[in-house]
Length: 187
Image (tube, rainbow, N blue to C red):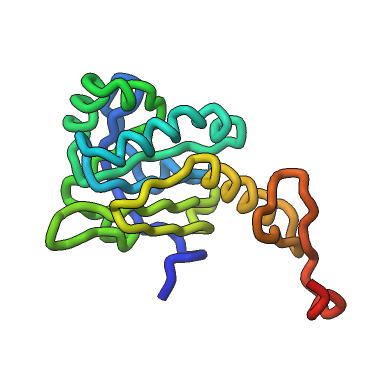
């Protein structure tokens, strides 16, 4: 069964954010769009490139009312140490969530049990707490924040325009489709 359109399970976690340790839960997400970005571990190789790319695009996500959450099975203490020592991670303005019990990684079905690490999982969650976009890759393949931004915009568009869908490579302002009997076989 897919996690698409399911409501996220209750959770409690601690994040490192804006120089503080903060508690977050499913209630923290209610009422706004959120993106969960799971990554394997702090102090690694591909992970800082992804988190820095998200940091470089964070203002664009914020304009859309979206909060990003970087999540690994490290502790919030490790996230602070990484933030304090890595030039790439110093740019991160969004919460870095500790998941040392792997509760979130299990809930989102990205945990590699035998390693205690998460796969690279990306989840766009709507204001009602439902998963609208899900993408999971092998840990050797980094993600692109601009493509994620496009998907968030498409998810928000579809949510605010019932009866319309976004075709492949849709960009904000481009034409959408209105599925109907008349459209069948015409694309």
